[in-house]
Image (cartoon, rainbow over all chains, first blue to last red; front, top):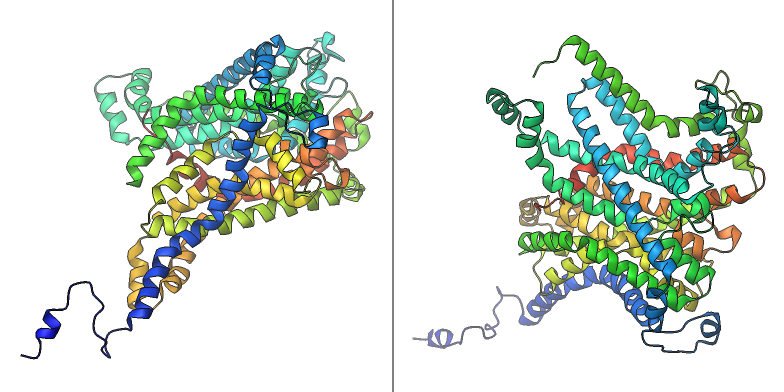
Length: 328
Length: 276
């Protein structure tokens, strides 16, 4: 038998050349190309993430252990000070005051946003279609107006002399508000900033919760109605379980967003009056780029990051775990 | 749960009032921009303007610098959106269509990068740009916005590509298309809505960004619109009508893009919810 030669060819070895089989060389090249293709394709994104996000993160950790004032910045000297920056910031009573203020501000803004948004979502469900569309358009306009445009309008509305709020209050008989400055004290300034943030944050949360409510089958409400549940009971029994995961997500996102606000706080009063509306990101900016203490500012940023990680750890853990399940 | 007519009217009125409260700042921005200086500063005001003037818009647009800021904003924003869209699509395709070592690790990296507080990187980013000689240069902001939007773009596009059945590409390949050709002819057109949604989100992020622009662009002529808008308050007398007109001009691109995709955006973001 002349075929024995073929049969004894070990599996996986190069097949004998034949006109119908591709030459082995080009075959291997194709496989190699197939293997490297995904890496070549993700390369730009990978490089960008590592160079523009990963590297600065490592740098941040490094700088927080260095004395880096204007002198070191100009000379390029590396002065390592160990935990000196940490002890200086952590023993600064101003830092603690600002941290507490930032946490309270974040909590107040997030809770107000969530309650208001939940209310809006429920309201949307009960409105007739025409009014609902009017409300939705209003929400989208508030949501889409850029942050700094909004900040400017709020300054205009709350303007001491010509703002519509003081004009209206005066017209309503509250003469005391003529020339009232809403930015004279820290709490008052933070309230205006909080209002501004809530106003812009509610639409997204409201739409997200509304989308969640729409996902609940009508039959469940009917069943609850047949069982004699009133509106409130139906909400707890049917709506609440459906929107709870969404509520967790938007709470997490809101904390993430509101804790690190800079634009609004800075644009309204630069953290003033007398630093009374300063929050952690503003503190970081003032220490570092305005005060030229880059090492201290990096430490402040790192501490800020740690607080944020503590606040959101549970959710990130849940998110990563659920994505791991999706990915495998 | 039928409601009576009175209840429905009451609820409707209430809804309209709430809508008015929410739209008021935007509404006040637009109407103030249409007023003359006299109307703006008088103790009385018209909720519904009796007359309108476009003088403020002319003032804003002819103000020295305004068009430069507008152009700066457009350049860094559109540049960043384009870069992150290209890098995002390139990464999303193998993530979704191919199985390779390190794929899961890269996806985790993208996820974590998306959640990391970007603002904390201000100082190292500043030093990085300084050492690269890019401070006061538009490319520095473009790079920062690219980095800020890329993880989200990758993640969103990965989801969108996953949503397009691979069978379609396979069918095209059986009909003689190459793998790349099949992607280009079949999947890419179907991906268009995803590309639009994702780029709008990146656009809004970059268009709104203030902190990095404020720190990196100390040179006045290199500033972007948000930084410029924030600076007027310290000026002595404020031309509110002009500022409101500038704000309206600044808001228009964001509003237009946003309204186009908001429905899609909500459904995508909700898809990220997990049971807690």
